[in-house]
Length: 378
Image (tube, rainbow, N blue to C red; front, side):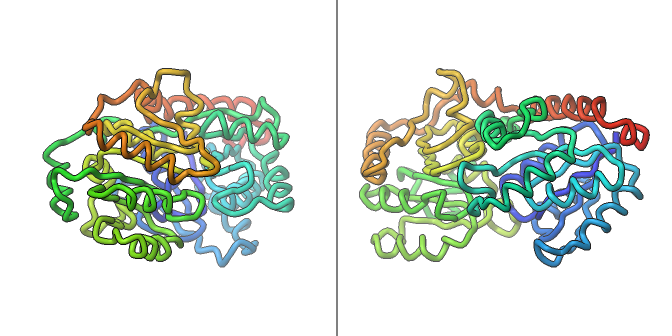
């Protein structure tokens, strides 16, 4: 089988890095096209031996993308097109249909009121639903996202849940690397370190972490990620008097001297994901694999699980005083002396190999149910 993956961009982001990890464990031949921004993940994919092309779209309304994608699909004689992220799903589904090739799409970022961090409008939703019908199946990265798709009116028979996954072995705690990373970041070996990972955008509520750590003398904070809120968060740390106890690491895994995500997690003592809304919560699963106690807001990766599979997590529930609630939880963690835990059963449930196997089943289903013209093309 030969599959073309089309994605909106390949900068450092959850969907982009999940695609790279998935391709390492997907036993089919895959090429990748990015509509724009061939960033660090594009470099990583090429290093893995994946062919990556940049379509170099000139904005969201560059309609020339459709015929260019259509020609590319035809010339590549792909059996299947797999699209990722909103713009790629819209343009990619249309191009695949024009090329006579079956397509599936993964929905990574559909929230209740936002998609990919932007407000959902009536037009955005209408265009999504009209182009969704052009594909053979839509993959949801969590049960929560599958429910949102059904609420939008996507037929249940077209929705397949394939959760995001991780390579748990890559996050197995390494005490020596913990010490080395702390030394690199200038953090005392015996300090209590709170951490967060993700795009620095308002919905992630990293400001809560800064305010809570400011109320905990001796605690340190590590934030790994890039985004438009970086300047505001740095200013908040300065105003809170803890700039010397906060480390902003930028996009870990983007190259340069910054440590990768696993060593950064090993340097922490408690992980916090305070997001108002998530479609999965991959960073939380990675933190659990690293043996960290977790405090979280919305997180389908945990919320959708049966009871007992992620026992070392605390759900933030306060609407009136989230900073006070988080401070209390962190103070308890700090006093407990607990620094590491065995990875919970949830980690095995989200093994990337299982995700790859489930996706292959979706591919087979899509090809079996494709219109006769598309099957003949394949």
